[in-house]
Image (spheres, rainbow, N blue to C red):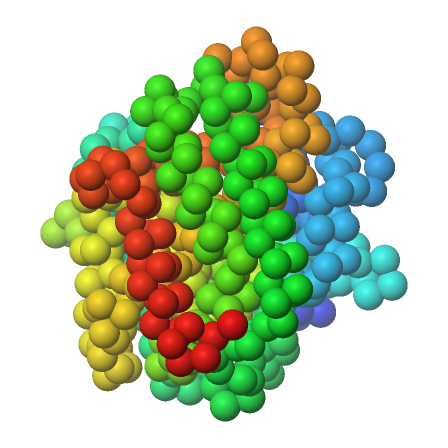
Length: 457
């Protein structure tokens, strides 16, 4: 209690004449099993009492820290992901800064900040915020403005049917408002490094376009993308074949998938650079806005709205390029039915907030190109996470992605289900298109052919 008082006074989130008098409870959240509370590090909920209770002070607080470099996952240790999050960027400091400086001015709700600190020499940090009071698991009804139960990551099939698509419209509207307010300069008083400026792609006019790559370099990338195609299709069609629907493991579909990854993967750097050609499509974005990084409620009219959490990696980005961190969490059937409507929803909200009118056809093109990059990302994590944590021998006896051996590893759970969702969506569109090339492959081919004529090599 004494330490919390000192911390909150330092952060000026607690009045000088007030104090934390008691820590009533401390609850560590699971780091493994189906109930794991995310993959960014160990977390806890603490309940406190204040000397002077105030409606503006929260008694339930959420605490977030990095993975330890030693010890079991159950005890908060994961050296691989500690290096991934703490040594390859500055997302932890940046998340703390966003809660502190941008949270109060965002155009939607986000948990109140109480304290954060980071040690630069060893990258240890702590973040304390208001604890969101989600509804009870299994709760079937709620009052207006009462938080619904947490939507578990990539498990939308557990939710009531209408929520499986309504959530993503709420998320898309929030992202559109966020980008629009950034375009209007509302966040400019906050230093750029706090807003992830260092993660932003080079601005238009500072790079060559079309890109011109030496033949040897392009051939090297083709070999790399061919390997990624092999990794992804081998995992789905062989290693974990029992865990995926037969539609997704058929030879013809996997061949179409491999052809897309192999050809388009050789141009992933060019695709990323292409996104920078559209400054009106770039604004501050939440890069990991899956449904579990939001909290939802219905207003008095039954309309769904949301607040956002977990801000690591937020930065000015092309708005279409981050959709694979959000709407791809939907079930494949849902995404196939709603992807065009979700793009239209973003376009309308963005126009309403900042006056920039995106071209819907161009939005769809960039969405498809983003999905090409997403497949490469999934293949990379098959190798980096899935095969590292669950060995091929184990997969022989695993018949469901809900098996504890998958679900107990946060990253295995995430990436294996991400593959399931993405491939279901792609398969639906592949069937609708006559079982030829993937629809995103068609988009890529059209894009590539056009720019090759303009000098892309």
